Amino acid sequence: MPLRSPRPLSGLFRGSPFKPIQEHMRVVFSCICHIPPLFDAVYREDRAQLVDFATQIKETETAADKLKSTFRLNMPKSLFLPVDRKDLLSLIGDQDKIADTTEDIAKIFLFRDMVVPEGIKELLDELLEGTMEISASARDMIEQLDELLEVGFVGRELDKVNVMIAGVRRSEHNIDDIVHRLRARLFAIEKELNPVDAIFWYRIIDLVGQISDQAENLADRLLLFLSK
Image 1 (tube, rainbow, N blue to C red):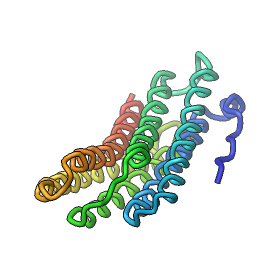
Image 2 (cartoon, rainbow, N blue to C red):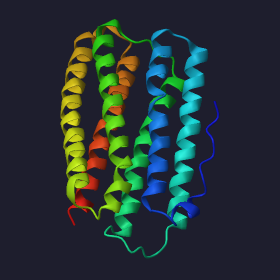
Image 3 (cartoon, helix red, strand yellow):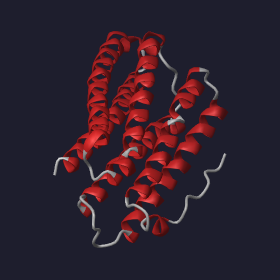
Image 4 (cartoon, rainbow, N blue to C red):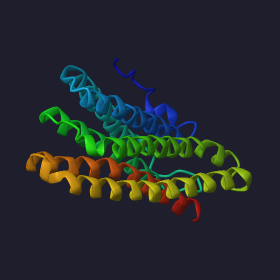
């Protein structure tokens, strides 16, 4: 289904500079939401479905990239906010990297036929589940920015966001452990695989793991400018 065009970002700045960042993060999360069905198509060796979901990821990443570019072009040079302009630019840049990584995963499956080794399926499912959870948490964290602005970055809303940031960071450490176990499992069976396939599976595991790393970077970026 084609992604609807978002509202013009120039209008969003009249309300809050966080609104276009939130719009962008919603598109980024839409991109990530295509990952589980993409992997399901790989599991089922359904090439037509795989191409469909990979294409949707590519189109959604392009939409996110356009939002990022429009944000940078239309952002006023000065904003009377307790947030530095360059911090906002860095924040949307960090979000966009998540969509880029998602597209990188889709490209591998799009241009190379891959069969999921039985020995890694269980842990791979665990990694995908964790990735969706941390991505949803990162999205929810960004959705709180308007409320923070309304209360002047103090009080209960700030405490709530700090708790969310801590949760994202804990989740990233848990996913790191899953990635480590998944690599070890793949190493144990790699002699049974085509060597090139093994290389690509290591790459796919690393890319999926990068999404959680980038979600943590987003949390760290937010924590940095909230502490200024």
